[in-house]
Image (cartoon, rainbow, N blue to C red; front, side, top):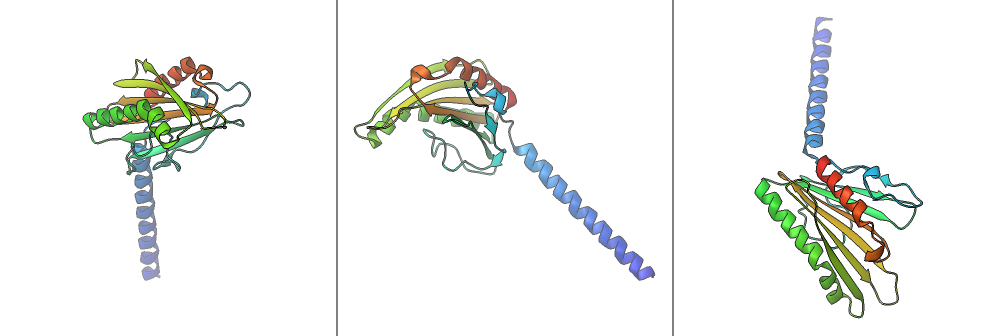
Length: 202
């Protein structure tokens, strides 16, 4: 009876230790993830509410248009996808870098990717048309910059994208909003508010 009691005690202690380890691991993982936008933070859609996916480790598949290859796919990278019942959708990718200096360098790289996107896309799509606009900075975080990109493949529908690149401390996030349309249709003012919220949540 004594041996049996000791064995049960040892088993219970081992179980508690495993639970404590799992809890600590989950807590550490959650702590590594930057804060993300909520569905209501995105520009309101005229006829459909936004739905938000789970915050997920790693890059989305496919990676966001215009910034493919610019974001490191490491353990400190997370993403969240958003959608509506219409053609409008969005995705946010956030990274915790090694230092504020590394964050600033990553933000610069993402800004360059967004600014060069229309020209790069045209080179890969002869006969198509594209345009872009620099909507300037937003007073949020260490830096926050908004861009717009319009693409129109031959004999196909127009697509419009808005991008926000935000740097705050060691963290960087890029938000892409997209739907069918042109830059004239894009909700730039509302997206600038989204950019401010992204920085606040980061």
